Amino acid sequence: MPTYTSFVDLTTREIQNAQELASVWGDIQSDLEEQGIDIHHSYAMLGPHDFVVTFEAADRDEAFTTAVALHRHGLDCETVPVLETADFAHIVDER
Image (tube, rainbow, N blue to C red; front, side, top):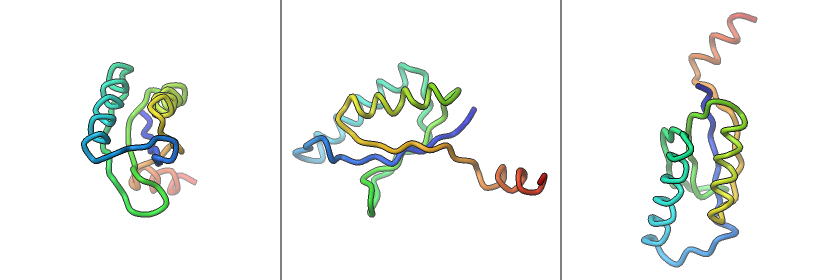
């Protein structure tokens, strides 16, 4: 199954405290799991984005569903397909 990464920003949602953020993230995870999205990892991060989420989706349409779910909760995101380094090396070796 293809793997995707979303870089998530809180810019359109006002979060009052860490507990509220944890609650919102729990709601998002529930929504995604109900849609069959397998979340691999989620991390808070320093830098231009607030969070990074890595997940598997059956196809591009399902990945779009994830982005819509994040937007529905007031979060902005940029979602990109990703490959494990070993898979990338295999593709490059074949060329």
